[in-house]
Figure (cartoon, rainbow, N blue to C red):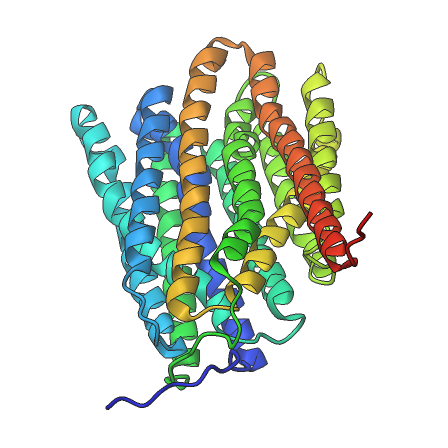
Length: 437
């Protein structure tokens, strides 16, 4: 007869595990931003696909990744260990790194088969990435992390993401300076380097977690299912807004950079400033509580205002636009840290299997929103007619994402505050003694 497992809190992890996790997330983010920032640009400029076809191909890959993430979460058992999660993320990231390198070989193929080649080669990358992504994300709630717990590790995650975006942004600037003759081979070298870093960092995390082989049990008093679902609505809504709208700013920047209004140096400055903003805010964000909605509302208002100022500029100035991008990065980084920290705090009340399903739902929401955003970017590129010199429309298309995302974050923060206040009023009313006339 199997022994009954008693509930236990998440194990305390050493600082070495936190460092390995931050490095592994940095490596995984290199793959992610290479696929997100570089892929759609490479498809249109080096593979030769049309804007709408490139957007649809990227969107289709994201849908596949979302579905695979949900299926990958179902592999998790109630008694999964930290060591098993470490091995799972290593296998997924290793396969994803190899698959993404194959995607960037497609410029060497005949033009007639490039689209189908991109679609077929993108599927293994998305599927493998989903396996590693679910495992790394679920690790957030499986242990008690040093330095501010879930808020601290979520901040370190976004520092790693910001540094990865910074490097990929610099790489895009290098591609713009190289010209079309050598840019395709340079892009392949960048992908190979990113994949190597992702492989090594994922292996480091795997080795660090190998000694944590004991299984984890659920928290002693998990919240009821209806309350769990209500609490999860806000992080899901915020990450959907961030993933749907914000990428228009970063993904369209290379197109504006190579137009008459911009330059290669301008594009690199804007993307690097945005990434730096998302990094610099994290030490502060790690100390801010996740319960209050005010931070989310302020971040949304800042995004909307800065996006509007960027769109209204009649000409492009590197210092001004980089400053605006830095501010957008601060606001977006704060909102992103809130999503992951809040979700990790809620997920830690449950066992590994339910945590994996919760994180899979969160990442699937983000990926489906990104898929819709990628298709939207393709439509915006087609409508802006950027190849003919109509670049003012492209600047507005870039700023449209931060403005929409900012408004949505303000509305979500208002709705969340209203929900919390109504719940408090109901609790107070229930605690008061009833009066009989």
